[in-house]
Amino acid sequence: MENYQSILYNSNDNGNGLSRSVKNQLTMTGVMQKTMIKHLGTLTESLELDLPTTVHALILLVRYIHFKEMKEDIVRDPVGSIAACVLLTLKARNLFKAKKFKEVVAGAYNVVYKRGNDNDGSIVNIDMAEGVVNREEDVYSVLRRDVYVPDINSLLTVNFEKIYAAKNPSHT
Image (cartoon, rainbow, N blue to C red; front, side, top):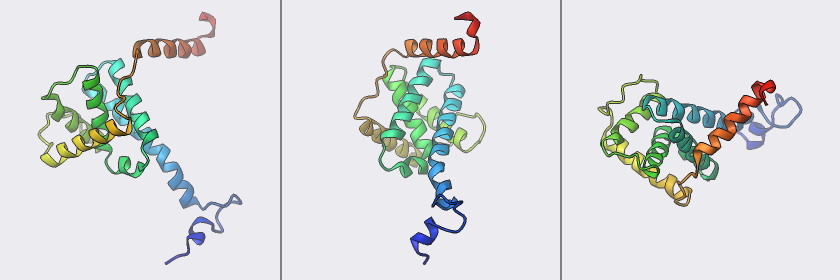
């Protein structure tokens, strides 16, 4: 068994003390977060959800990733985390329909594992469903039952105006 110091500090550290493998592990968290956010956006697009619903789900996911202490759990089950955030968003916005549950879970599975856009729900089994429900409960408890995001339209308007002003300085 290797000494932990030889793993962390080796001759290839370029003078800053950390080995490349440790740096890669540290940056993987950011890569995984970006990937999950991208997957959530792709899922909401395939489910044809409107922009405020997508933003609401993204806010829940980002808050969940930020406040979750054991981030490895999120990485181990990205399908459950993404589906749970979308389902909680649909419930918070009074858009949830029970028959849409399988469609959301199947869509999350297809997006994460690049299986196409077939969200018919036939791939969802009882274990997947239970995993998503458990993850939904975890998201709800980690966020301390605060899944309401107030006035998303004004947030979108302000941010779109800032982006537009930055791209077109002559129109300000």
